[in-house]
Image (cartoon, rainbow, N blue to C red; front, side):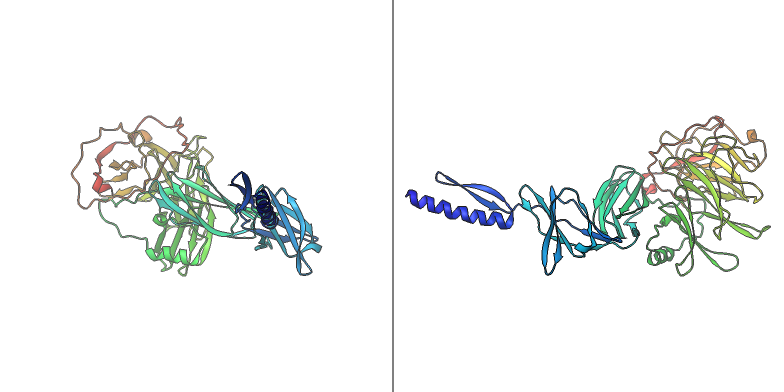
Amino acid sequence: MAKQWICTFFVLFLSVSAHAEIFEQAYAPIGVGDITVMIPIDRQPAAPITLSMMQTESNYLLAWDPSSGQRFKLEHWVDGEWVLLSDNILTHQYQTSQNNGPQFRVSACDQYGCSDWQTVNNTVDGDVMISRFSSSYHAVERGQRISLAWNVSSATELKITSNQGHRFKSYLNKGQQNFYINQITEFTLTATGFENTYQQTLTVSPAAVMPDFQAQAQPDTYTQPLLALVLNNNETMLPIERALLSMTLTDGDNLHIVPQHDNKLSRVSDSGELIWTQALNGMVANQPILQLTDAHQTEYLYFGVASLDGSGEICRIHIDGTDMQCLTKEPDSPNALNSMVAGPVIVNGRLFSFDIQGHLYEVSTDLNVNWNNSGQSDINGYRYHAKVPLTEGDTILTPPVADKVKNSLILRTQLDNVMAIEIPSSQSSISNLLQKATAFFSLMSTNETDKASATNINTNTNINTNTSNKTNNTLAIKWTKALAQDEAR
């Protein structure tokens, strides 16, 4: 009986040894009577996903993803067989002479053994390029999942990060990843190659599309085909759908303006071709407006800019992409403007713009007025009026609607309050423009023709609340209404 057990153990030992030599696997103890036999189990580390290679003047640069390996083996192809270059590489990069290339393969190893081999599947030639970084949605409900997709070339590693703490790493030059959105989130794609790095950003905002609320319905200047046109012909553009502007000019030409989530403003042709692009310091969240100046026979776009840091700008640009000017400071003050999420409105040649806290500014549309103010400006060209009284936590996120018949500006706030204020007088004395706030009226009956629009954007940003140059006066409210839940949808 003893000889029989000895022979059985010897056969098992030879079998185990053979498996260990071939597979470099882990072993599990199996008890047979008083004898413990080590049986190999399949516990290989994962093979690297990619093996990238770039050729320099004299060397080959190799890089692979770390996988789960603690060390790596690298081989090259010589005279019809694989020859070991190193079996103890502790990083995931390697440089070798051109005499050893151009065919390589890498394997990840740990205490249990080594993975399958990964051959070169990413040949890097040239600088890193990002041809696509896009989101499945740009305006979503809070907590909704979005999918970010990318397509890059000449990269060895990709990282997606955000200002809200998202972190993701990939070694695939084409792919997609899901994320959940609860606040205004700026995503950054960082693509790294052997010798350079390139970044691209996009912004996703929690938003809820609301019905319009205005005294009378106005013709819609936004054409849905423009969005399809942009998406089909400009894969790298990230349009803000609610901010697209499409209209016919007095000379018969069509004007297509595309605000984008990556802080750009562009004009495209009828066929979707890019005419010009202007980089901005923030996002144009609502539709720009067009002002035709007959005296100068020139046309300007006006728009508000909202930045992630809570600052804002009031800007204008000629429709040919030139002569862009922006106001970044409060009138007669070094303080930065607050975020201008709501777009401006022009009433009888006067431009009004609200920041998210309800402060009302007026800017001259006269081309002779210098818009590049440094905190000191002509009160007739740029001035602060007063503040709309808002409940705590409420903000203004949508453009006002002008009711010229009743001389009113109608506002829709984030908390679904709709209010009307009197359009400030054009007299130079600001004291004549301001009144103390009247108490909010009780709910008024709903006018069937009334409509409003708003975008519910999270405003948890670091907003400049220094109002040392402002008075405590507030704009008088003519009437107010809190929308019911079914009206606010």
